[in-house]
Image (cartoon, rainbow, N blue to C red):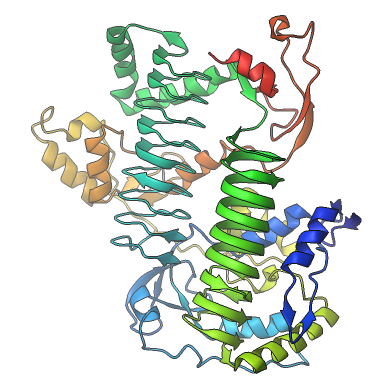
Length: 576
């Protein structure tokens, strides 16, 4: 075990023996010499922020393809140096992947040379793999008919969803998986025909529910197990239940009122200190499902032997990673899928045995490369023989070690994204002046639409139903052609035809808030990625203790939060 001080925030942190063993395991061998990855110089949180600064998930700009010159939507703003390509040009033979290649200069920093390469080669405008009829998705894989979805995979007919997997006909969801017709929900699995869920599983026809399992037709209820026709945690007859629910769902104002009441109602009930479901071994953190031996991590699914990871799916042997799925033996990786035995990688797909790469696909044995596809034994995009590659990489790592670069993830200074464009800003927001003090880039230019009016004000969803309103088709046309003004931010936004069709089919009220505002509201539902040592708050004597429960635990609920936080034993006795 090693005691360290973060060179950025100056906080103390510990590198444990298991961490050191992992660094040794992931350390590569080139030309007969093993180059051990040194212990990190940044604390876990600063390392996470650094990785997040290389991920722009939701800031989209109108730009121009650098080859065909047609207008594109890009994660790179027009003032950025990187040359973005539309997907047709990027995957074509219109450009030479090696045209920006360069020789490694021993007299210059590796990261300086990588920065030069990054800004001289072509980049894919949006990072999407095997997506059909989904022009405006990013960090998405194997999805079809989706619009403004990010960070997910295997989704169909979804709109404004983030980090969702195997979803069908969903809108405004975050971390929802294996679900159909679910809307405005967060971290729920196996649900159907439901809205405004948080941490619910196998629920059907439920609305505004929190931590419910196996429930049917429940409204604004918390901590229910296999219940039906519960309304604010009170059991009703079917007819009475349907009557009361209709009072809220028939209008947008009713939905907003139910949302506010549900937020207050759930505070009457205890919260489990963490959400760890079907996990084995030593797991610490929050929101984990079907995982084993995952420590200090958050939002993990089917993950094994991991530490300091966030938004991970189907991974083994991984440390310090952000938004990665389907791989093994990864250190300091971000925004990638199907990686194996690699480190210091971001925005890559199907890459093995590689280091310090960006936007590379279907390749192996790369070092310091950008935008290569189906290549191997390349350094700074230059092709070498296998023997030359190994000898050259060994020399580069030796030089990087002398300069203090080996073992460090890409610096934020060379990220193609400004801090306030990146995921780091979403989870760790700071003001511009602080960003400048930390030498972080900041996007000052506003590329949003100006003076978009006149505006269209959406009606209650029944007004778009031809059976209720004979003029419904006229109203539908007005909505599609119109521009909506966000009732919170004032920013304009539009509803596309496929999106409106889904609202009408599922009787969902048309949103009055900009997608960015709705996304922020979902993020605010999450606890921060910090653990606090606390004591169970249960004082129910029938739970096996004479006064307050003595059990202690690590939880993401901060001590100043209003929720009543229970240990596993007391929580299980409290749910119904």
